[in-house]
Image 1 (cartoon, rainbow, N blue to C red):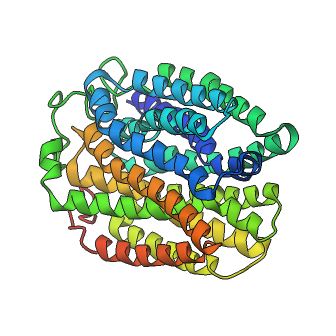
Image 2: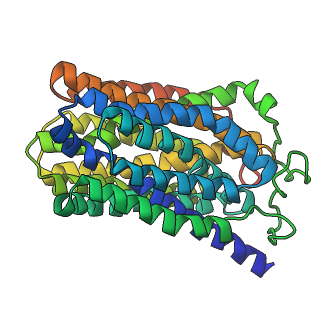
Image 3: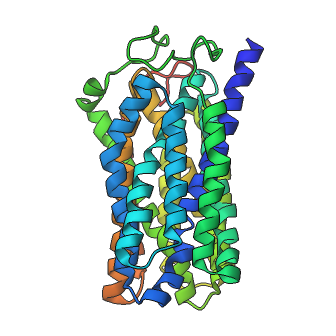
Length: 412
């Protein structure tokens, strides 16, 4: 039994690494923003629209990726996704037009993203009955670690060697360091993988008995549940604001006179905070329930957005970014945890992939709208005020989440 549990934590470590490298590279796009603007003379709306295309492709591919992972296993889906993302970055170094950028970073990136966050999250959930929140928190802390480390390093590469060389380095790093762990360690639980007690079996609908006390929805049943659409909406609204922040925080701060390398460190502060937020939310929600922690995260995000509407120096910006990271990191752990409590794990690949469509729509929309608002108004204040209103709406939606029986303490 101890050996089986240890194998589950190896899966968590591999998922953490995969998410760290790929999410960190994704959130580094803001570092490339102004160098490309200066070279090509594009509008911010056009440059930010790449993320909209990536997220649109992501949304279209997600259900198929989740279904493929449920039916055929997750390893090859994740490995192929990592390879495709790395290829897109390598090709991105040779961009000569907006069409090239949209094809290499937008289309290839969008095709790869479904296998690099939703699928490893589902694999981790399947390995754990107890401590599921903690395991998810550790794996998803990779988003924070990647945001903390990769954008500042990318900014140094851009400053020293140019944005094209930085794209090439990112591509090779993703391919060489992410594909092997996917193949070797990120296995679904099953007889050959030494699944721990209580884990759901080898990735097939109806393959193993349900966990005692857990609901076990099919994707069709989940789509008919009101709670599914509440969770879907929460995720979409939260990631709309995230798209505004993560893609535009570096341009926003450099507009205020901050050096690009310093602004990248403020982006890194979001990553540092999210590491704490993801692990803390996982631990606290395991003990006290998901809903109260979710409400707290949404409240903090609204307060931080209010702070961003007011001018401030490096210390104020860094502090706001850190606390936004704590709240956003916790939020991103609580959504899959909530989905697993409401709908079970049997078809979670397809269910969470479908919920993650909201992430793709929201992130792309937020990135695009903030760029459009800047082109129209010359600033980001209206975007941040809109974000506050969206967080208030999220708080109201979170109150609609029905209580569902938790095996330990009856709280969701």
